Amino acid sequence: MQWKVMTFNLRTNVPSDGDNAWPMRPASVAQAILRHDADIVCVQEALHAMLLDLEPLLADYAWVGEGRRGGQDDEFCAIWYKRSKASVEAYGSFGLSETPERLGVLGWGADYPRMCTWARLRASAPVGGNDGVLTVFNTHLDHVSEPAQVNGMRLVTDRIEDKRAQSGASVVLTGDFNVGPAHAVVRGLEQAGYVNGYSALPGGAGAVGATFHDFRGGESGAPIDYIFVTPDVAVERIEVDRGRYEGRYPSDHYPVCAVLSAN
Image 1 (cartoon, rainbow, N blue to C red):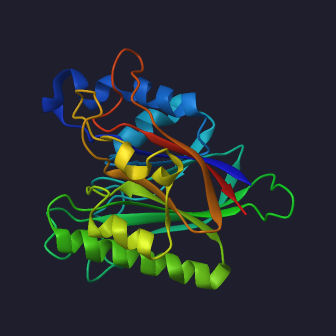
Image 2 (tube, rainbow, N blue to C red):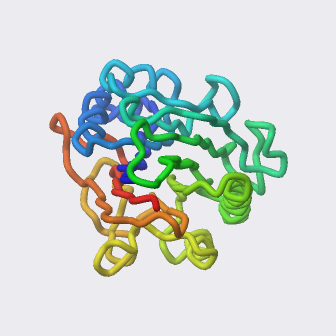
């Protein structure tokens, strides 16, 4: 069963961004998503109003999620999915803190509340013997506290393993991890058997270049945006899209899109 999965930090609505502020960018964000014909789009830093701005531009998509302080409050790690491709069987969110059932809590010295949203998707037309189920976890780790990064990801993987123990479902983990390929968060995932999507590239993650560019473009640096999968999912290809849409960069992060094949 093939899935096209994108992770995309949208850059939240900050008026001081001027010509790059959110009101100037919805069309370019939508064009990037449509260009890749993504089945699943995992976004970070999206405010509720930003998601509403995208809805009429992404007519074949729906989304699930909530704000990191609960309800519609603050940034979402929303999961968009193509309605012609799949339906949502279940979804939820949890905080990245010592009290994960309470959103909005600062965990392990984090600068902001952090969270993870997950969704279990079932394909409309499974192929062959595959049941067409894929569970998606989408997160945004803290940018300051290493304990928050490490413990937050440990909490995410614990939840992933719980889901896999219950159903055995294939899993994709996406997000802005705010760390480079040599960091303990990334190394820990790889050592635990998760497959780094960048391993599908010649040279692996070390050859990717930057995924955050601050609206300046270029590729000098290391990636901080990732797509990981469980071992029963193959990464056929992956691309960091450094293109412009509607004459501009759609965000201060490049979208990353992978083609996955679930066994």
